[in-house]
Structure formats: C-alpha cells, structure tokens
Amino acid sequence: MLFKPDEKTGSATDAPTTPPARKRRRVVPILVTLLILGGLGYIGWSAFQTKQPTRTGRFQMPASATVPVLAATPRTEDVPVYLDGVGTVRALNTVTVRAQVDGKLLSVNFTEGQDVKKGDVLAEIDPAIYQAQYDQAVAKKAQDEAQLANARIDLARYQQLAASNAGSKQQADTQKATVAQLEALVRSDQAAIDNAQTTLGYTKIVAPLSGRAGLRQIDQGNIIHASDATGLVVITQLQPIAVWFSLPQQQIVRVNAAFAKGPLVVEVFGNDGKTVVDTGTLKGLDNQVDQTTGTVKLKAEFPNPSYQLWPGQFVSVRLKVETLDQALVIPTSAVQRGPAGTFSYVIGEDDIVHARPITVTQQNEKDAVIAKGLNTSDRVVTTGFANLSDGAKVSVSAGDQVITPDLAPRKRERRGEKGQRGNGERGKGKGGHAGEHTKNGAGDGAQKAAPADGNSKARQ
Image 1 (tube, rainbow, N blue to C red):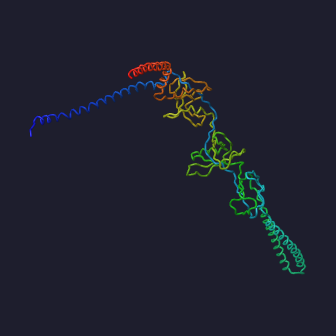
Image 2 (image 1 turned 180 degrees about the vertical axis):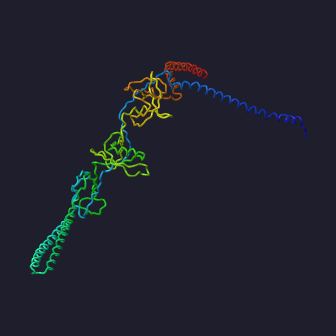
C-alpha cells in the first residue's frame, strides 16, 4: 500500500475555503432582488406624487371665484306652537246590543254597516208568551178591582148600621180593613201589569243610541238569550268621535297652563302625515302619568263629518298650546349646525358671507323661529353651502332660479378613467393612421411571404 501525503495535504487546505464561496453566491441574488424592488418602489412613489396634486386640485375652487347661492330675508309673523303626538281613534260611545228576554228571533230589521237612529227597532222576538203574561196580569187586576168595589159597598152599609146602632162597630172596622187590603192588591196587580208590559216591550230590540251598526252576530230564526255574550250587534257612535293620544310628561305643566286659559285646538293628520283631515278640541287629560312610558293620555273630540276617522285607526295629532306674536322667522334650510351650535351664513357688504351664531326657539320642515342673532334687515343663505365658507364671496341668484349642480362637489373620477378617456381620444384621432399602418403592414407581410414561398419551392 502506497502512502500519498500530497493528496491529504491538498484536501486539508481546500476545506476551509469552500464556505465563503457559497455565501458569496447566495448574497449576490439577494442584493440584485433588493435593488429591483427599491427601483420599482421609487418609480411608483414618483408617479403617485406627480398625480396627486392634479387630482386634489380638480376639487378645489379658486379663492377668487364667487359661490352662487340663494338668499332669504327674515320676516316677522305670528307662529303657532304645536305639540306633536301619536294617538288612536276611538268611538265616542260603543254599545253591544243584547236581548233582554229569551225567545225566537222573528226578524232582523237592519243592514250591516247601516247608520241607525236612537229608538229604531233592530230586531223582534216572538212575543206570544210575554203577551199572555201581560193579559193575565190585566185580568187579575180586573178581578181584584171587582172585589174592591163590592167591599167598598159593604163598608158603606156597615158604617150606616154602626152609626144608627143597628150594627156593631167591629164589623164596620173589619170591612174597612178588607177594603184597604183589596186596594193594595189592586196596586200590586198594576205593578204586575207594568212588569208584564215592560217584558213584552223587550221583545222589540231597539237601538240605544245613534251610530253605525256593525256585523250581525246572530241570524233570524235562532233562539236568542239574554245571557248571550256576543249579543245581536255592536253600534259605534262615529259623529262625533274621540281620539286618545299621548304627550311626554314634561309637557303636562305647559298643557295645563294653556288649557286653563280656554279650549285648545287639536288637529289630526291623514295617512300622508301632512294633510289635516279634521279639527277638534281637547276634552281633558288623564289624572296620572303612565310610569312605563313616561307619558300622559289626552282625549280630544272631533266632529268627523266625512267619516275620515275610524275607530281603531292610528293617527298623528298636534295640539296647539300657544301662538308666538310677531316672531322672527327664516327658512329652516338657512339654519346650519356646527361644533359651537347653530349658525347662519349672513351676507354682508360686497356680498361677503359671515357665519353668525343664532338661537332657534322652534322649527319645522319649512320655517325656524329665531330668538336672537338676526334681524329683519339681514340676508341669510338658504342654498349653496357645498363650497361656502366664512369670508367667501357669493353671488345671489334670483329666487326662481335653480342652483346648478356645479355648486355641489363634483363627482370623483376613478383612477385610470381619465387616462383611459385620454387614450381613447388619442386613439380616435390616430384611427386613420393606424388603418394605413395596418394596410401597409399587411402588404409588407404579403411581399415578405412571397419570397418565402419562392425560396421554399427553390429548396424543394
């Protein structure tokens, strides 16, 4: 076996130099990748910085430009103060008509949904049994009256005999007591007759009040009882009609103070919430507050001439509690709200607007009552707030003009839309040249294709 010292020495010297070479080969690709990513990031950041100023500048209005607006002048007028609530329509009176005697229902004399008057006969029950009872009571009275007449004659006879001492006074006194008993019996018979007559009258079921008849609960020919829970029909009084509504308990003192001065007007709105369908008066307040809701119930009465209010209907109600005399009023659109509270843009000299703080007493969809901050000589901006700021110059348009959409912020364009639009226009402008280039390209291709065919044939 031969010993080769050179080979071992060479392998020992090469071993330490191998790892650094591998590390260098790994570091180079990483550095190249980082340089590429850094270059791409720089290009993107530069493109963003160049596009951003033009994009933001498109939405800013020049400082020297005037803002077109509409303006209004505050006015003084009497303004009613209303308290709004939600209520339920209820019939002023509701009666379930029931039979007071038992018997067969012979006829029904009303139509479902018919307006009936007080005293109208609604139905009739078979009166045969009750007529017989009445006749029996009348006959009993006649019998007792005959006995009473005979007893009175005997009393007169016994009194004459007693006066002449031909008869005993005891017999006269006994006959006098008999006459008194018979007189009481006749009065009892009359009471029985009245009872029988009343019972006989119950066979005709009459309307206890004027109102609208509901749906019939029992049909003709059935046996009706006085103990029936459903009754014959339900009558509701619709004219006048009542509305029960609620107000917050914080308004109790205000309503009581106004109610003490006189009747308060209550208005009911239709289904659209804007049209007043009927006007009535407040009748009273409940004597306690509902602790579950923190509200108090009120009752108002309405004439309801057109039957626009119906029992069970939910309605919007407003109660007029007072009237503000000669109050300063501006359009509600002129009232603006900011961090410091409500304000309005007031147009000053040279059509320069200034934000002025105001105090609003009350407001609705159209008008707002101003307590302080404005006077009748001011002009307030009502429309055109999109580009408006304190100290801006405005141009007041006529009241019949409509503000153009330019006053509102313009629609933002998505990224790339503007570039695509410009490229499209440039594409349209160069469409002819592109067609010529296409034709030329096709011709060149054909010319180049011919030699190729020729060469291919020559090669064959």
